[in-house]
Image (tube, rainbow, N blue to C red; front, side, top):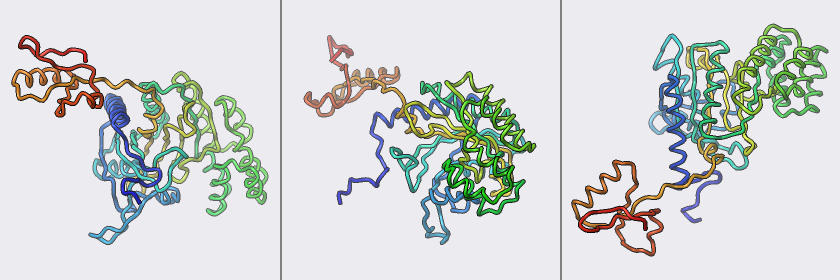
Length: 385
């Protein structure tokens, strides 16, 4: 086998993409910094129990694992940076008030998320700890949408959901874990045939509510109105619907459209409240994801109210309009102090100056320069090539 081949769904980034991804990273982090988010950089590798969220089979299946030759314990390569940031908030910073953190780094998945996606994502995101109200949900959602708008990724459709609706139905019915897991899977797939079989033994009100959930998606105002009629009048459900309605009203001016999908239980095993996903016309997969996860800190011995979002920089890059690479200035390879001073002056002014070691005009196009430095009347000048 050729030793230059890469594993499936693992890709190199060539210069144009790599520079654009780096610029996107810098722009989004700058936006987050201006909003008070502080940068953290967790390690790529940790003990498996620190990275694998309790009860999340999905995270377990997504993570590469290996044995640490120093300790003999199982290590995992991170598949998501959120648990690491929760650990940092819980144990390293240990703040009592509201904490805003952001991050950017690679994560690795055992399987690609979509048909055209890489298994090595460059995840960037923000997490807000210590506030459990709707205002913090709206802050991270608005920041996510502001980042997409800054990158000129439009139009954007925003889907909202709330895991508290399903949690309330399961809790009030005291369903066992096996049935709860099966119902969760059927709802995620919107598999009404499987759902009908699963709910057949249940009481009529619960059966009616669960069968209605896959149909409760679409325009935000319409879904909330239909949900109030179709679902039991539990306090947790009414509060969840109130939050969804308020969020939809607040976020509508920021996006092309807002929808609600009550059967979207993405991240159900660790999310505890409102969840959200942004979509773009040019992509079948969500381009940004997030939600509330107040219980995640329990894994680290300190539960904290938390909400946040994440995006894949490489996916965002693929959705942006191609940009013309700024051409540089070609300089001759000479030991000339005046030439070196001119090169330094141009670079300090923000220009790209490439020294042409080979002086081979046939390959000069590879240097990506449209101007050159020439000596004229004892002065180094920039002229068009």
